[in-house]
Length: 178
Length: 116
Image (cartoon, rainbow over all chains, first blue to last red; front, side):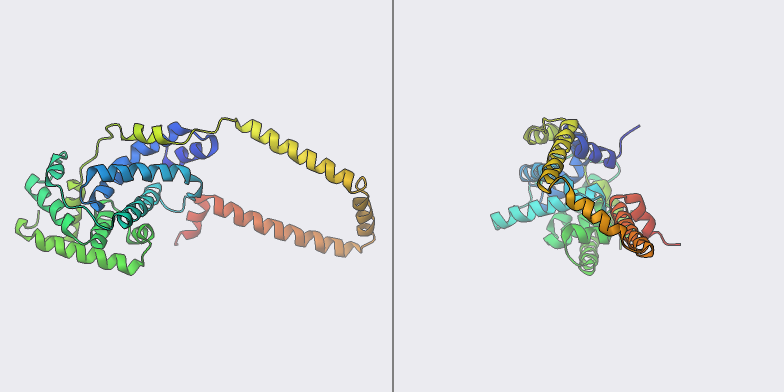
């Protein structure tokens, strides 16, 4: 039987079991790195550096995880804080790297052209709208969870998701409903 | 116009699964070293320090004389007052125990949030 996140966290806390933490990293690395790639506008090297920093901070502070939210939500919050601190240090965000974007594996279910346009349109959204859309629409967080991750009011999250969605819809209107 | 559900589905499907490709290994290599001492050793150290502290307190307090005197004074109290005091202490300790248990038990927290 596969261990739950809570079981693995209990092993890390009780026995300082680093293998259990490794399993948590394996489980969540894709979604955390995916979020960071969206935030950094597909700068994969930067996103992976921030991803490593996210998991290192999670390990050091795992005792402060109280189980009130999902472990993935807690990780997103750390990842977002890492990104903000880095952005503050750099004072600027990097641009879109189209070649890196296209180098990713294309899922079978979405038209490659639509996927490209969608990801490109997403990368053009302002940071606050892009972050809200990625968390809520792409990663399935509730508005309440996203508000906790971003540390902003619930109403602001709802507004950002709504505006982001509308902009994406306008950009993708030519593709029509699927 | 594209529906919200359709857009969300397209966004989810457009998000690629990112292969681990050594990422986990790189994170693991940077983790601080795990604690060396076993849990039983920490428990024994704690127990030893507690026994040592209790022994010192016993010796420094004149062989527990104040405890004996306190018990004698307590025995002179009316029975009903002792019962009320014991009941009050039980309530306070019980309340703290329940609060602590709820805070530490996710299932109990979830139960408290249920709507019927």
